[in-house]
Image (cartoon, rainbow, N blue to C red):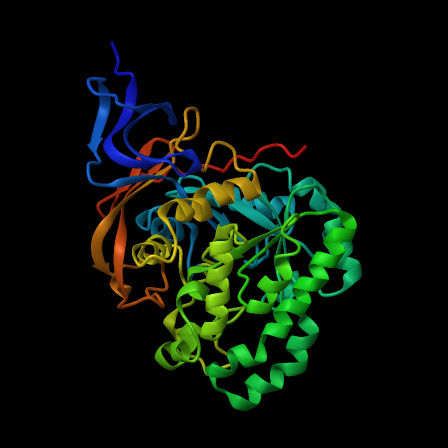
Length: 444
């Protein structure tokens, strides 16, 4: 007689639905969770002793830039998903600003083909909105592997820029799923570009791309979305003014913040890291960081996403403002945020909500976000007591660096389970890569 479980995680402290925490065994078969509780004496093909460890619903990073196709010298799907798995992340949602951009059904299909047999974790891909493809967006958002529609309101990526109200309204009128938005006001960025060009100092990055640029674009997007009754998800909210505005619009707007904006602050980060600290929207002063934490504590923030956007050291060494914006983050998400848990800034159950249950709820991910019967066996196993130093040498991304180099972390990912398969254990990838497309619930 065959064993009832393919994999049995024995004796871990599980974070269960509604924040309950209990020591329990997790039985897995056919890629799904089939039993949770005291499973002593039940046979399994593979048993992993998780005593002293915490078993969490699989961490999801809902904003990564894996650069393929066209920019593979910075990252590709193999290295990006390897970094995710090593960091305890079980699924990622990739953004459309590649070369060419992901803007058509054929572009989306090409990305899905590229991921097959190369992705260590499960993936989905956003389609970028523009005036050129607006009429096709409603159809594309329902295609397999599509995470939804994404818009840039500021010139982080000109080929996908949506800067006028008419096009923005057209995009919001297409389809039914939540539209994902990068909010910076393009007109203000152009008017103030002289600040960066004349100053040539990366410390001026948050002066050029200021809080007003962020909140004006946010107001514009929310006003149009309210008029069309369309739900929005705002990426990497970075300022106190945005949070003050959004508290009155949380009924139809969900909010992401990044570990970078919750951990780093100006001016220190620019003095230490130079252009490595450059990202859009910028790392701002500590008062903004504290406003983000207040929003996390108040329940205003729905998701932690990393905006993993790797660039080579050679690219980053270019003089500002020719230096590109973006930094890696998918591999450091778990240890950085668990360190905040250890230091009392958020609870472990809130961490789970922000990195697993939250993304599943916001984007309608099927069978993810809980340790529950019938859900997919996507799990992140962590050692909350482990003390490790984050270093550039640990980073699997092609860029080979992290803004958190030298940070002493408390809490570390020790095992990543994707679809019932252990893909990382004790810092080693266990192959071959077999990540699949994330499934989404039907939108009613």
